[in-house]
Structure formats: C-alpha cells, structure tokens
Image (cartoon, rainbow, N blue to C red):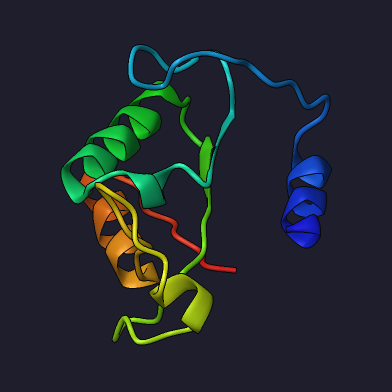
Length: 112
C-alpha cells in the first residue's frame, strides 16, 4: 500500500480528503476516489452501482483506487482473502473488479 500511496502522491498534489456517506453522495470535485476495505462488505449489485457512481463523479482522467484483499480467479486463495466471509459480500477476484469497472466505462484498469 505504501507504494500505491507514493504513486498517487507523485501524481496529485496537494492531496485532500473528503468525508461523507458514499451511499448518499460522492464528492464531485476530486480527481481520485479511494475505496479502501469497502467493497468486500457489499454484494455484487451494490458494488457495481458504487463503482458506476464513482466513475461518473470523476472528471475525465480521474481515477478510482480500490484497496482490498484479492482472491485469485479460482477463488481458492490466498487463504486470508479466500476464507474471509461477510454477511453480504466477500473478497472478489481482480477479474470481477475489472469486469465491473469496464461496465462502468473505465478504460484503463491496473492491478498492483
């Protein structure tokens, strides 16, 4: 995560944060939205909707950063991610996030 943060800081300065309730409204005046340990706790329909709204709230060239534990595409590991089960959601594979982001209109997707 430190490498990701350093990469972000090198691209945007100054860095500001905005609080709020992402179910109600996303900030519309930011270049980057960070969703950290949020999506694992939601079902697929809610995640798709949140990612679509996130993309729509950003200016052209903006970025959505997803920080989550990832399972492999077979959903068999790594163990900490594969064994984590939540009431509504679960940990998702990079391919699932990529598909949802593509549906939302995102064209450049990178998994680090």
